[in-house]
Length: 232
Image (cartoon, rainbow, N blue to C red):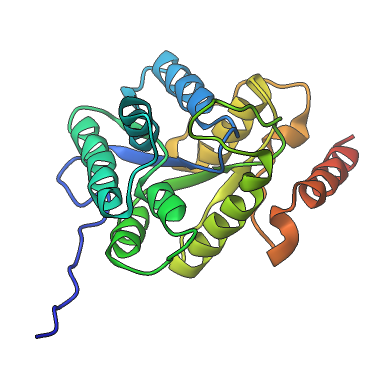
């Protein structure tokens, strides 16, 4: 007997009016730092903002290993449940990754299946999706990050899946205050927030994926350099 495919509620399907922001990106691209900085900045503007940490990393640290395939869906569901719980008592929820990143790490070998369907359904319901660029140096953590070269295929797969699902996204660049300013600039139409001042205006300019090769860090560096030159 053939099983019918399960359907999943998208993010934002609950009665809460909280805005949901997804921070996605390859390893060591500053998602956690940005989620905390963004949360603090929005709180300083009088908004009830909450940052939801990455569940997959917490799971790996607790278990001391990578999850097995059959464990991935439960991890993804817990990640999204944490976002829903935070949205019940907040104006803005900032998700330091979503179920889509869990699916991507599981899907480096197998991209189709229940996990990916769940992740894409949820991602389509986020109010904004920001992708952290590959311009930050890679830093090993001894467990979850295995090699700097792993970032490129993860980045490429992420952008491909977002494009396939019709999810609009913007890429943020820079370090520290520049990365925060870039994120705030991208979110201004949604939230009406003020971007923190930054010396480099190009670091706040939104950029979206234009071609298959733009996940290459050298290509991104050239594009970012061109933006800086035009801003002068």
